[in-house]
Length: 284
Image (cartoon, rainbow, N blue to C red; front, side, top):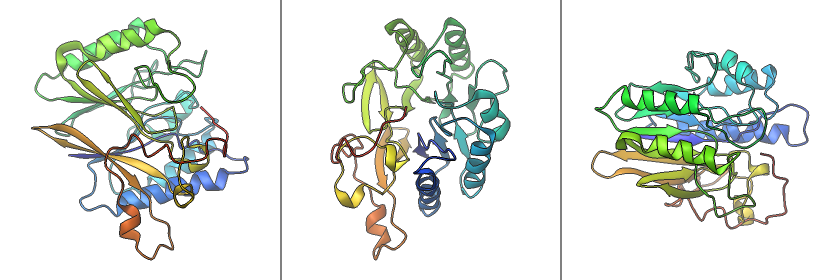
């Protein structure tokens, strides 16, 4: 099983780099479509649209329509729950409960659980007692398959970047950590939010954070040749070894050797340390 992860596209109208953000997402979808074999799923770990407006989601939906693999989304702090649900209901977003945009994808060798870590009070994550109960109930719904979770905010202390804690409080993060370790069936967590590649652990659970798909907002040091190339993650699952992660560099349209440009470096953490840190603003 292969899952392609994109994140933090921040699509929005009326900003100087609006067209670039759209082009980055379109090029990434095209690159994923060219993979052989195709991924079994594409997951977007939040901040789909920077302002959460219906017209922004309509634009993203038109780009998702070109994808050759099923697309699923989890909400980010910049997203608007109701507008995201309206734009992607039944497809990229399967949430049916009015309170939270959380749901499960059951038809793969690994169950995919989308979590809603959003609070309107902050750009940081929240995980209240109600969400804990919902997560544990979904973990317990099937004891036959391993589970991979996708969410926006990394639920561990991120030691790169300006803010190690990406939740409203240590208690909120610890509630989520304990719930994820319930029953021992969660084997991987995929996140976004910090706009850079990094990773960590929650007990025995590997957590991978993908870089921002919007290249003008990506953090870390990159050589000149990579600064306008989107990077996404490919997560490959093997029943014997679990998930392995590859970072994929999207080819330029005019590359002489597109196959070389598409081949990413194994081990995503570290790719983001090669770019001038002051080049672009940071929007979370």
